[in-house]
Image 1 (cartoon, protein in one colour):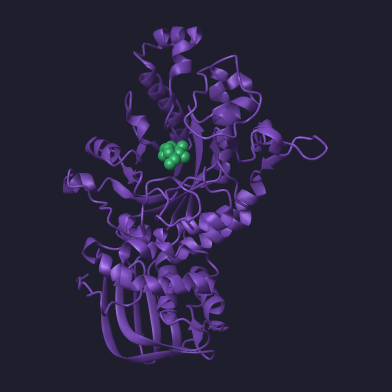
Image 2 (spheres, rainbow, N blue to C red; image 1 turned 60 degrees about the vertical axis):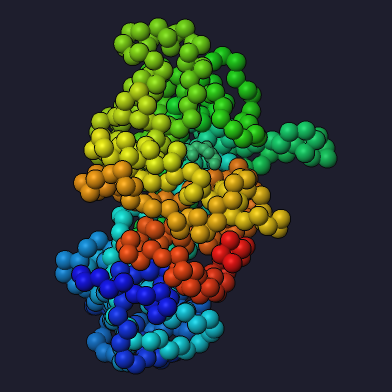
Length: 518
Ligand code: TNX
C-alpha cells in the first residue's frame, strides 16, 4: 500500500486517521433513498451493514434500506487476501464502496463512512466529499480496560461502552472483574464469591438504613448476562478478555472463602477502602482446585485466546509470615516469594495452556521468572514491555499514568474526582507505542496499546463516560493509525467533529480537554 500522509488541513474527518486518503472529484449525497447493498448470503456483511445503518439512524435520523440485489448506493463487498481488519473505502458521486476480506474490515469501513457522514453535525441527508481511503490497523490489540470491581457498572453501561468502542475501531475489552473490593462474576461452583464478595457496606452511619439494617451496595454479572455481553461484543469485532486477579488483590474471594487465604485473621467483610492490601491466596492444592474450577467456568464464558490473571501488587508479607508456606517453599526449592509467585503463575499457565488459552498478566509476573508462554501487560511504564519483548514474549502497552483514565484530565475545579496528576488528551496522544529501546524484531512483540479506567474514584456511570472521552479517541489513534499520521495538530483539528458525534450518540464526554490545547 502506498502511503500518502494526508496533511491534517485536508485530511478526512476520521478518528482514528486512516493510513492513506486521496481526495477525488465530486460529492456523494446520502439521503433517505440511499440503499445499502450486501453480497447475497454474506451474514458478516449483513451485520457490518446493520451497524452502519444503525449509526446513521441514531445520528442522522435516516432509515436506510438494505438489499442483496446489485445496484447503486452504498456497497459492501468482499475482497480476497486483505490484512486483518483492513478495508478500502471509495466514495464517488454515484455512491460508496466498502471492500474488505474479513468482518472487521467490513465493519470498520462502515464506521469510517459513518464518520464521513457525520463530519457535519445535523439530521437528515448529507453530502460526503469524494475520496479514496486505504486503511489497516497498526496493532491487533486496541484495548480498553474497565474496572468493574472498585465500582460496579450496570450491564447496560458495559454494552453501551462496547458499542462506542466499535466506533473507535477498538477491539479488546479487558474486563477487570475481581479485586480486593469486590468479586463481580457469578461462579456456579462457588456462590459465596458473589453472595458475599459482590457487596460492600459503607463505614459509619452511612452503612445503615433508618431501621438500623445494613445498607449494602454493589452487584455482579450473571453468567447469562456475560454470555450476552460476549456475543454482543463479538458482533462488533470486540473480544472480551476477562481478568481474575491472583495471587494478590484477592480479598473479596478470601472473605467469601477464608480457607483460600494465607492468614487466619481475616476481615469479616469486603473492604470499602482503596490501596494495596496484603491478602494473598495461599498455595494449597485446594486453592489451585478452586482457581482452576473458577477459570474453567471463565473459559466456558469467554472464548478469548487470552485470560488475564492479574499478578500485580502482590505484597508478600503474608507468605513470608506463614510457616507452612515457608516450609512448602523449601520443599519446592524456590528461593524467595517472588519465585513462589512465579511458580504459582506457571501452574495456572499450564492449566490455561492445556485448555488452548494463553495467559496474560501485569508486569509483576516478570519478577521471579516469567512463565514460559506468558504475555506481559506493561503498566509500570514500559520497562516491563521492553524486558518481555527482549525475552521474546508478547506484550501490551498500558503505561501508568499516561494511559490511566482514572487520572484527572484538567485542572478545572468542575471536573469529577480522579487521581491527582493531570493527564490530558494531548498527553495521551503524545505516548509513543514504539520504544526506541527495541529492535525492529523485538517491536513485533508489541501486540498493541490499551487505556485503563480504574474506578476507585469513579462512583457514577456519568463520571466514567466523562473520564473516558475524548481520551479514548487518542488511544484509538495510537492503536490504529500508522506513525506517520501521528500529529497532534491534525488530531486536534478532527476532534471537534468527534465531540459532535459523541453528542449525537448521547455519549457524555469531557470538554475540559480543550484547556491544555489553548
Ligand atoms: C494500580 S495498574 C493498580 C490498580 C489501581 C491503579 C490505580 C495495576 C495493575 N494495579 O489496582 O486501581 O493502580 O491507578
